[in-house]
Image (cartoon, rainbow, N blue to C red; front, side):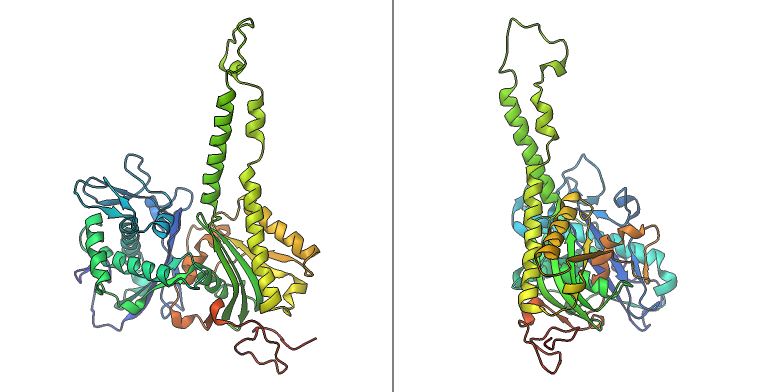
Length: 461
């Protein structure tokens, strides 16, 4: 533990050293979380992805399952134990029902909420990450006192979402406060600390302005800007998470980025999974109503279970899910809506419409056929009926300064949000959200100003 009275917040040594800014980029996911830690001033901007070791997902140790467990004393544990209560889709629960009461979590009479559960999970993830960082990175960062920054991602376009941003900042501040205590993470501590934060108290080892809630779509763009894939011009990025599909169309110009159109919808892989399960239940229910309805006492009695089953059962379960087609239609419609808006009002003269809009399909659900087919459906329309050359699919490349030993290159896209979040605000260049950019006004003098589309020649012809 740290020698300053807090839990793993400083390296051992002389606290009179010049402070070194260290940023924790926390991608709070529906199915799993990813954390990247970085200093802009040490190791030429080197960043490290946290390896969660035995607590990480069995297929990828850089993914921490978003499944907290609580014992009878309300103490939080992370892992794959099936003997304790678990709370799937915790991120969606705190988004939809932050104050929903969850009873029976400990032996006390306290009532806890989805907000308390989220605080506990984030706090424990922070403890694990800081401990790992302090114990493994001393050779690179251990010669200076740490000045912590904490950026957490939110599923938002950044427009008219002040309540969501405020809520997640309060959750982040509270989780930080609980995480630095020298005691175990408990629900009671989360509840007490949350009340203190709501009353204006800022926990130790950080300041209020160094805790930020940043839209995940912006973080994805930031990660791309810092990668070797970077190109100026018009881009489309589709991030498929467990809960949401985040779509953003943006322009890059000399490191600055401008969000021209975006969408965040509940069309993620876990949402698809839940609807598929419901569809299977309906098929089973329909089949059960027919099961045994054609009994004939004259016929010989079947001698095996499979002989009792009607032949039609195979056809009921071999067909494709009806939900898949609905999802494909909904997702491709969202992609087209964003692109239509950008092409008509934001950036109609981009040369990328003719060469193909550079497109990235990322996130944990991006390999699911439904999402690949959704993108193909949009590409087909834009290349045949949209007056463009369609969408030009590309892969995000891993930043050269990201240390992630053991991470397959093809899985970097799952860390892209956390990597983007691990940057200081001052490093990011100019970030203009969609709401701050007026519809395109074609300028004869090709100046880039408010109302213009940056990154290419806006002059007529």
